Length: 440
Image 1 (cartoon, rainbow, N blue to C red):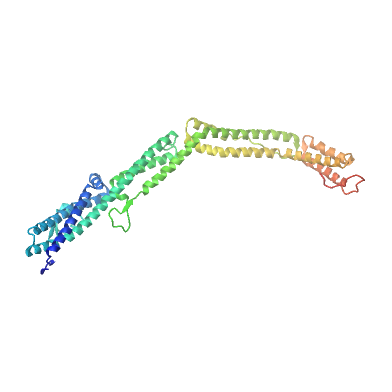
Image 2: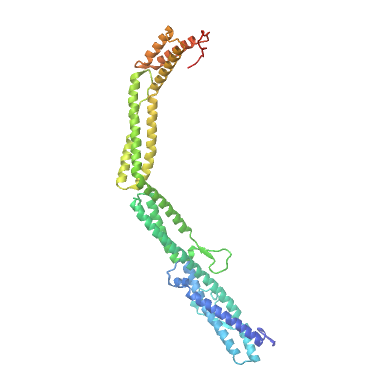
């Protein structure tokens, strides 16, 4: 080991050879990396793209960094070549050679010069007020690694966004066009159906999103927190994913409209049947009311309204929508009509029940009177004068028109009371079964 100089002890031949071997390997690795960066598809795209926003700013800086990288590499290669030439002068290097090699390999004698235009945007010489700097070879390698990592990170990020989003947007746009054609075929159009408005909005959003992604890909890049590796992160697909969901919603709406087209005639036939049954039931209720008013006296009989004309008008409108293939309008109208038609049939049935209630009461009184008469006959009391008189009175009232239900009910009650009195507890005759009060 020689005497120490400004760069430390003078290296011996073995140390020099090991250092040159290491530096040669580093030179080869750096050159390979720089050539790979130069040929990177993302870098070529960045060079030819019309960039905007954050991507434009970062690419301006990255371009300067790549230029500076090559400047650094050339300086590094020159220094390494000079060292190799000195070592190759003689098999056994002299002390003067070793001192020079030590200074070259360990000292800060590597000068990097650059023009103002080449370094103005680079993260190294900018702002230093100098157009050249002095480095050791180790410092130069460290500086190149930093610049390379930052440059590669930017190129990978832009390339990743370009590789992911535009293709997906194009596929979604193609699906959007197919959906739009299908929507138009069933009448879902802009200004005529909410789904048509949604399709127009999705189209505008996708067009703008693609333009932004192409010109400013880094605006859609999410770096991985805590990651120092180049390209650590992922494309931001938030806006794209939102439009995917929106298109899915539109497709579901169109599917619903298509379902209407497929079963529209069946549903219209069912609607006509429901309204026809409701009309017939109301007609029956009106006829029954006339019969009740003729046959039943002193009874409150509710009036029967006619069929709502608005439902028939809407049914005609629905049929017109079907003829004109306006499925998007037919769908909500059918849903509304189906519910209202069911309600109308229920109302008609309730009206018929309310109107015929007095006839049901009369029928119940007639049945009760005949049941008690049969009971009396089983006990051999059919010819009892009181029972005959009261039965005839009740029967005349129930079978006369108009029938006063209140009076007739009282007559039936009187007949029941007389029957109960006669069928009270008594001693049966020989051979006669014991009386069972209330036996029907």
